[in-house]
Length: 213
Ligand code: AMP
Figure 1 (tube, rainbow, N blue to C red):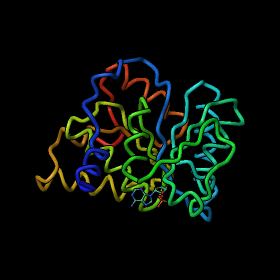
Figure 2: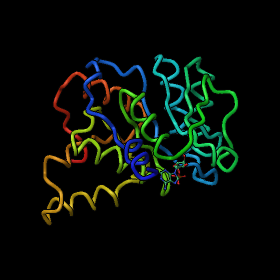
Figure 3: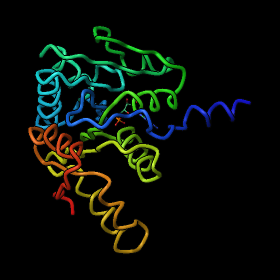
């Protein structure tokens, strides 16, 4: 029984209810929870939060108040934006839940968290982060590869942080492990200012010439 429930929670239904729009009303942000990182990463996180808040784009994220996660949330709130955090009960304390969000949703498992974050967002932004961010990034990429959703994904390659990952994907294509078209499941930007415009372009169905390809 327990296994069946887990599988159901992890399953993202086909994206039939998603209405194509030309501008995201919400973005799911995946980024690091570590606090002791270079200022340039912190600035990038805060800038994304501010721009989203100013432009009325809701932030959906993991609900913590630490690291880049907290900076995105605080900046969006300070700019008058809406921020929804989704956090599993067992890591509420560990991750230092943000207590002044527009909404903090406490769920029972990581699977439920990831599914709810994905369902609620119109698009995804991947900022620098650690293993948790990598897991979330690859999950949302592979869900798209499997046709479980068709929402835009942008990787914010701040300070070229994601270069090794992009190199690995390229290697996967050249070695035949990654289908060439799957390397186009995401776009990359090198500046935060380009992130929301890149998502908008993707939502308008315009072919984006990614800096990656
Ligand atoms: P990190 O990038 O490791 O700092 O983690 C960023 C976010 O990913 C945090 O909200 C973590 O709760 C989440 N996270 C950490 N480990 C995992 C994991 N194994 N699977 C999915 N998410 C995780």
